[in-house]
Structure formats: structure tokens, C-alpha cells
Length: 111
Image (cartoon, rainbow, N blue to C red; front, side, top):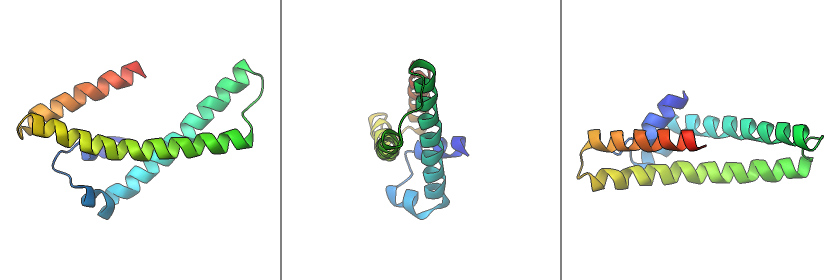
């Protein structure tokens, strides 16, 4: 599922209206929720290891809200960014896809 979301949101021919009308929207929402749970759990684990206790409910709520906003904006930003890369390569989908794949792999390893 996550690979499908990545491939769809990095397709330069995908319009923003298609994101909100298709099952892709449901997959994006599930991805955002899944990653929010994973990241919040990770922060709680790190807090438990280094501080000796999990984060408070208030901090978890703020963290989850911030992550939801950041990831939602991230999907929209990635869609627009891919379209700009596509325009820079003058409509060459293969070059744009290669560029995006290299960019994504770089960020994965940096993260």
C-alpha cells in the first residue's frame, strides 16, 4: 500500500482533484495515521529509555497533531514538487521519475 501511495503521489500527471476523488485519498489518510502512530510510539520509547517515563498525554496529543499537519502538508508539497521537476525536464516522465526516486532515497538515508 505504501509503495502505491508513493508511486501515485510522485506521478507528475496526477491532478490534485484526482487525489481527493479516488481511493488514493483513503490510502494517504491511512498512511498518515499509520506513520503518526509509529512516530509517536518511537518518541515515547525514546523518552522511556532516556528519561525513564513515557510522554504525557498532553505532549502526545500535541505531537500527534503536529505530525498529522506536517505529513498532510508534506503529501501536498510532494505532489507540487514532482510537477515542478516534471516541468523542469520539459515533460520527460522517465527523467522526472528517476530524479524523484533518487531524491526520495537520499532523504530516506538521511532520516
